[in-house]
Length: 500
Image 1 (cartoon, rainbow, N blue to C red):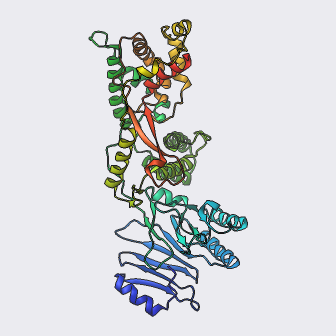
Image 2: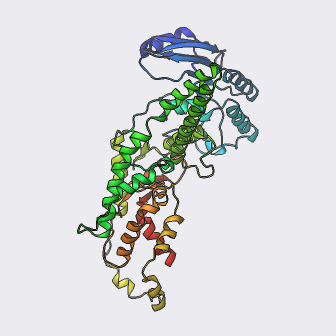
Image 3: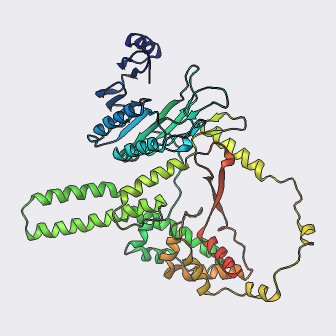
């Protein structure tokens, strides 16, 4: 933090705040000055210090921390700020692990990060973006108020900017996938918000639901598992729908058991295989050694492909497909997507920020309960009497025709295979990969429904998720509820849509 005070005065405040250790950079005149305080549970080594930068390495026996943390106070002068960026570039050349970089950068990344006054010069924004690219850093986002600094002048001369931020490299994303940054309302006499960074943000602990993994479908024995799981219930007095649901339940149970046996922890296995490859490379080449190296390499390639598919499925990246050893990119993309979608704080109706999980959940539930509550008439028959029919007899006849197997298969294979699944956890990848074994049951169930002999109870359940309608939403009204339907339900809906 910028102190504008000599070390002696800063030390007195540190004692009152209860910190044991410090590093102080004295101000120049009445401006500048930096102070870094930390608790004795941390071991902090000062690697570089200047009037604008404190670069540290951090270790702890009890806490999980980034390997390097750099604290920055960006100069207000453009040329001095450019020199400050150059110093950080030099620091970045020696970074080989997780790196957190934070502070008051006195610069913005987009024009949206400023409100009031003249627009920021584009050259300044571009210089800042180039600095981040050169250092392989990216903005870690934020929760809470949009702007972190305000000049506190009366309108219309008020200027607000987001100049305080936290940056991190890709290794930081991987080591701390739940990291969250909070902009906290400023202290009484400050024009800056506080930056609060929680490296291990506690998410709600819940049982992980079943999800079909795309990598399973590429296994040689995948169809054998489905064949053994998909039973014939003709001797039982079950409807086609009940038979289908029972087979899905069998499949889910058998796939979980099979995957634990055939797909163990790939990360540990990959590390062991890499170590074995390194050992074999140091030995004299012989027929046996060469043969083992080929076997190890083949197994390593298979596991790397599985890992890549695992993270690709979760990354929701559609413009880049699996198959080019992009697992690191997909992993980081997944972490960023999860961080972006996580609701860590939100404003209530009075404009107060809610940060407790229970309070956030209750606020969201209350909003949508009030939104979807109806006080109007339940019957629309009176209004429908004034609407002329648009469906002719011929059109209605075509809509009511029995569905064919070809029509069902066409609908199933025209839907996205990796879209988020519904409550049953089976994505389109499962249906399209296991179609030879499950086609009869799926087609029978759908034909039974279109014949009017069953309802969709059991497959028409939906998961509701909230998607932000704007960047960095602050209110519940800025989220769009999206329904995640079961894929079997989507097939029926697609058939209906194709006939219209």
